[in-house]
Length: 162
Image (tube, rainbow, N blue to C red; front, top):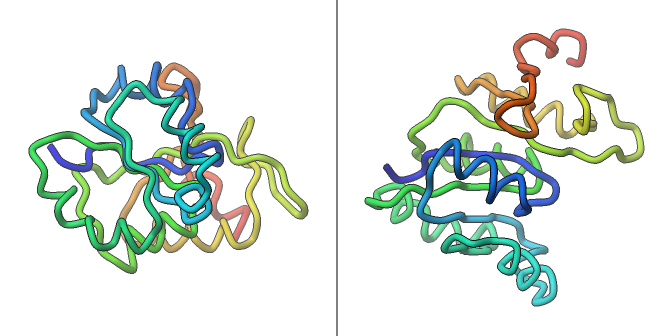
């Protein structure tokens, strides 16, 4: 129980999370950790409207204060961040306790100076450093939009990128 699924997704909460991933990995709620989303009433309300689950939109600091409570819960939660840098902070720097060693990566939109890892996954040098930090901490990283799409594993592409 507790934190049963972890994902980086630049859209944070949307149909793929609610319809596809929460069917594959049933959950009681979603915790989105993103300072901008938590601080913007418009973004926060849009994310809450996209979810049919109990949903929390928290800043990093709010999550840090609630992290142990979420990890010890009798309920299953997804933790989703917009960026790999935030997820690295939660998993590696803060030692977030999770019931999985697999980090799922959803859409990562193309930006300036990105490298394509897979369809809908374009990453920056900063993203690469964060994924390597997470990988070095013992997590398997899988780029996969939805459960029935093919996966690209970080371990298979990292040498080309670092």
